Image 1 (tube, one colour):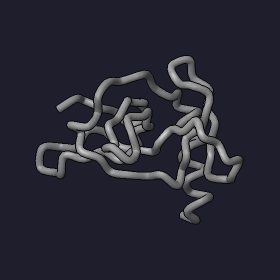
Image 2 (image 1 turned 45 degrees about the horizontal axis):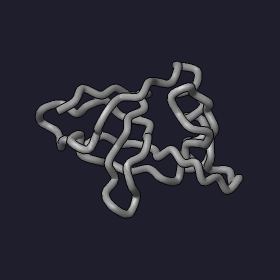
Image 3 (image 1 turned 90 degrees about the horizontal axis):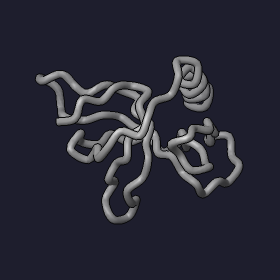
Image 4 (image 1 turned 45 degrees about the vertical axis):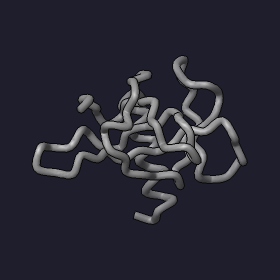
Length: 104
C-alpha cells in the first residue's frame, strides 16, 4: 500500500470509463483498522467554466482544474504514482470552495 498524504496529487486508475488521471487526495492513507480507501478529487483538462472547477496551476499538471463535484473514494491500490503536492494555502482554497459549494 503506498503511503499517501492529504494535499498530494497522484495518478489514479479510475477504471476504463474514467481513465487514468491525476487526482488530489483529501485524506491521508487510512489506518490499518479502516477500509483501504482514500478520498480524492479528479483533475480535468475538459473545462466547462462552472463554479465547481478550481484551477491551481502546477508544473506537474496539464492546464485544467480540480473538479470539486467529482469526489470519490478509491482503494489505495489504484494510486499509481505521486506527481507532487499542493501548498497549505492551495489546500485551504480547495477546502474553502468545497465548504461553500457543499454548503458545509
